[in-house]
Amino acid sequence: MFTHHRTEGIILRIRQTREADEIFTLYTKEFGRLDVIGRSIRKSRSKLRMNMSLFSYVEIGFIQGKSYNTLTDAFLISDFKRAKRVLGKLSLFYRISEVLLSLVYGQERDEGVFLFLLRSFQKIEETNLSKGKIELFFCFFSFRLLYFLGYKVYIEKCVFCKEEIKGEGYFNSKEGGVVCGSCFRRDPAGIHLKDVKSLQCFFGNDLEQIFNQNPKTFLNILENYLAFVPEVKK
Image (cartoon, rainbow, N blue to C red; front, side):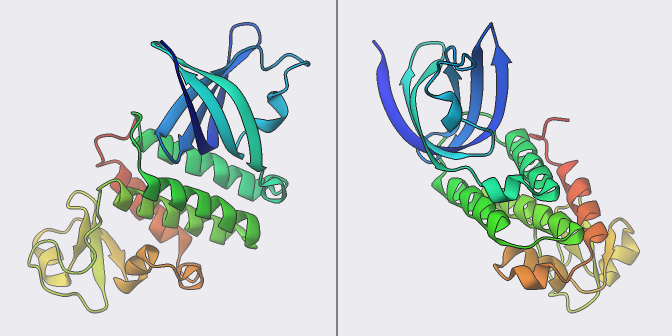
């Protein structure tokens, strides 16, 4: 017995298989991460191929079988064409997709993650992004995604003494949060922050404040933190 479903999603990866089939990995509104197979979709007569390009926002129909999901129809909502024409923004789409797929494995609905992903793609399409801003947007997306998935970065108080930090501090990747100067001197492990509020801004919605930060510092923090997330594919 086969069940037919419909959902909206963003195509994050495409893999070719067999002679003319393709496997699409999407993050969807109703099902979370989802793999569907497009039968004979690489053939010139396929009606689906034009609507299923990488990093497009689509509405799809699929049949859920015992071993795989088969694509039955697709409607293109947005292909983010303007962003794809800019090499830096296209690279950002790839990096966002990679970090999401490295953190999310099974099929589990999370509408909050879906809406955040969609709004992030829309913001990339609409916003002028320099190289530095692209790096900072990637950090913003990754920190917020980790938060949605339950990997909260503790930024309000020192992870050791629980005292509020004003001004200078450190980020301890192993502990997953900020450390005050006193605790750092007792256990000197962490990345220096001139002002801990600079990390806190990545969990707000003010992109201009985020874009004022140092890309190298926060890429370093992100990479170190991801290394301590056990679910990330190494």
